[in-house]
Length: 229
Image (cartoon, rainbow, N blue to C red; front, side):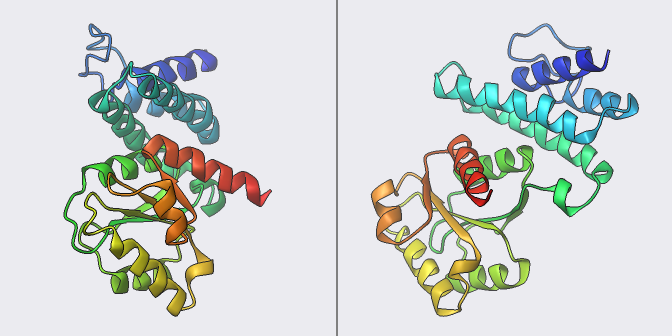
């Protein structure tokens, strides 16, 4: 029975169903329990939150990532699944034992100074939250000084910088320089992304990684975590 709940939860993540009112990617599922209801049911069935997350939510979002990469799913499909997982994480958070199990790490994310585009950043933030990271979204047009302040006070393990325009991507390099000047560069892993940037640019400004999209960011973070072991 418990295995059935987790399997159905995983399938509903894949279907992108947040609540029982949602149809799902395949349609005709309205009225059946969806991710939020199943997460609550799993808790009431004494299934450990860690199992719910790993075998239900994370396993489901990984399938969604594969479908997105294979162009079987598109941005609306991926967002529906990510928002469902994010909602389930909100339900599970009070039941997690402590900081070590509550989050895989703290992630601060921002669209850099001069840039007001936030769709890509928002998608990444939702996916990371759904994957188990504690996410602090700083918004758009964020100055290097503000980011330095957040890194100093919030102490994130990771920092994501986004830029859509070639005219604003230079702010990424300025932000990294500001972190160096304030003695904080070695305190945080910096990931960059957005239409304007590339792997070569990440190397040029000495970022720790370039991420194509939110799913790639999750894989990069997993590799960082493995490197610690």
